[in-house]
Length: 205
Image (cartoon, rainbow, N blue to C red):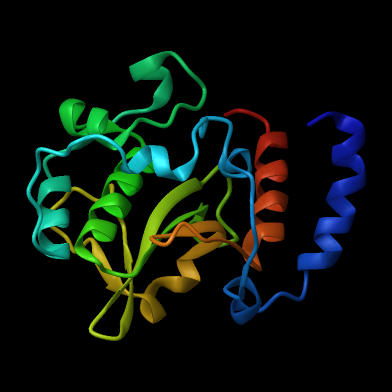
């Protein structure tokens, strides 16, 4: 994004987001989105991530969490020498290394296989006051009629799945795709873009 566009967008986005409430951020609207909207590393249609044979047997959301605990976070620069690269879930199974999109896409695919309503979500983690680039991907899912958030790269022994109402103030969702391959835009999209622009302008420490 060039400086001229940023100079126009910044004041518009600040005005559009200055009075946003938590409910505004989490308002979701179904909308057909091109795959590229989710990031430059998303080069394939969503069906592509469902292709291929998985060798990991999963019977519950708990099994997904337990398997992910054995995986490691590794950035795209380290693994592929790319700024943004989305692995196929079967590739991720073999490497057991990847960034937040790779962890979350694998969980999303497995939840679809289980028939659990879920969304792969791209946005920002951490409170809006946090400085720096906190672009992130995670999962929303429904279990027994309740909404949960799955933090798929939290591989410590602490919980990875939380009631959504308890943690949603620490997340700013922007875009999502559900297990029926419907894409949506969240109210947090404008806030996400604003924070991304401002974080890139901060001097390096």
